[in-house]
Amino acid sequence: MKIKYEVQDAMESLGISELRKHQIDPINHILSRDDALVISPTSSGKSAMFQIPAIVEWNKEQRWVLVVEPTISLMEDQVRVLQEKGIPAEALSSHTKNQNEAILTKLANHQIVLLYATPERLQSPVFQQTVHYDCPWLLVVDEAHCVLDWGYTFRRSYLMIKAFIKTLKRRPVIAAFTATAPPEYRKDIAACLGMKKAKIFFNSLARKNIILLRENCSSLSIKQRLARVNYNIKRYRRDGRVVVYCASRKNVDMVANYLSKKFPGEVVKCHAYMDSDKRQKHEYQFINGSKPIMVASTAFGMGIDARDIRLVIHFNLHLNVIDYYQQIGRAGRDGEKSHAVLLYHTDDITLAHFILDKEQFSEHLRTRLDSRLEELVAIVESDKCMPRQILRALGESDTQNCGRCSNCQKNRRSNHED
Image (cartoon, rainbow, N blue to C red; front, side):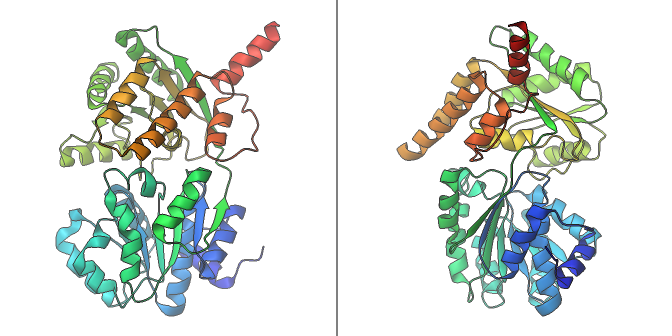
């Protein structure tokens, strides 16, 4: 497909020499002023699919784009990369409180191409007043699965994006991007955002460079389970980085303390109850490579652009397939061979239900969350190809056995023995 010259100019601004096939149609669709829901795996160039239209329209009419991100780290990382390339981009966040007024002034003076904000910022009266007349031509919701996963729980502001759009004098094009939106999610995301006849672009979610391994640790003690973490790090980390996910703060502390003795000076940790300055310091040490092993709660990783993560370990079973896929997708973003190891223990199911029980969910939402947990447990306890089952759960049915996961390896050995 021939690429328009204005798109080529935008590509050059971003340092992109060539677009992949799955990127072209969403870019053209958005430039045609039509809503879009793009489902594509990590490292597939989703950001370019909205940054290129943003630059094209800026070059033509100096119109700006609003990008909604779930975390400050994700916003700041994207803005930093864009600014290094000479693209006028800014992020509104609590970390830049004194600068926010100056940023809004720059916006009013047409000096910003892409403005990044969290959904909470959209509810600010000052922000709404600033953008009421000078509206964005495009509103992007990145990591759009958060609309449903977080909007109905602890981030109600996600469900208020639709109301924010209605405050604007002109309705923008709406584009949502995610790596995980099963079929039942897609209509709900579109409805929550007020999208109009949004076209769905689906790119295969298969990450063939990541080998999924599962170890049944149900008969092991905690000490033995920790030893398996140590073993897998020594075997699979190579020269890259490692992320170990835990389901509770207690486990984060325990695993981090254990690994600090095995790998002195290499380990940091991250969970929601840490002091924010200390958490940011640990994240920075992991990103710059000075501390290559991160032990973290499940929220870590969104917006962390560390391309050489060679190993992701789950010390505990996660709550659902969607988040599990997102987390194993942190590995191998550079396309190199990487591993994701799940240390499965039946006690994790009890822990998962305990975590869900702590929240006051509506009956309908709790039923859906229990169903997602049961879906993941069924995959983990099955002897069928793990990636194939995960992809089917995420709405991709036309897949083949990977031939490399724990189950495929075990089945191949059994067939040879027969």
